[in-house]
Image (cartoon, rainbow, N blue to C red; front, top):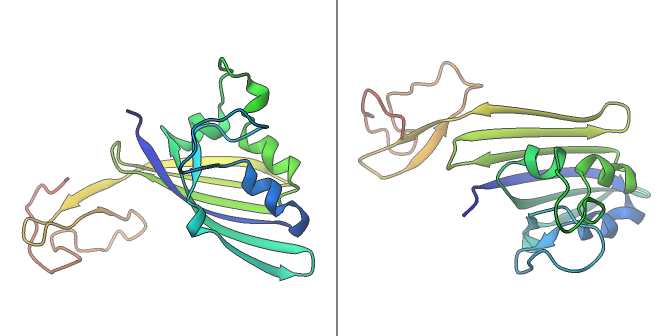
Length: 172
């Protein structure tokens, strides 16, 4: 069973290309199906889609999707497979095809404890970065989470949910 990366997407693009962009994602109840091009093993949660026309002819999308393994392996460094690479393009190709103005995606993979960041714009193309996450678990309230590296001053000895003192070596 693959590890799954749950990803928050924010995309700005021409309104005329919204449907085309969203159609590159499989829906959660689909399997890789015989249809046109689609983003390989990437499933959009249809009830999470927020569409806002920010100015005439320009729309912002916000939604949640799940991808198998990692964003980098599924959306960026696609290897040809038995279904044919042309059916499952990389994200860079999709952004160009849909005339995306700006794309930002942040995905967490809880099983392997990493977070990925993808950004795309027409001038700079696609960029990807990743970081390891440090998990924690509270024995008192049974809450689990990850310490955010961007807050180095956080007290990592106290549960952020209930205030209970965490174990000395609390790494999940």
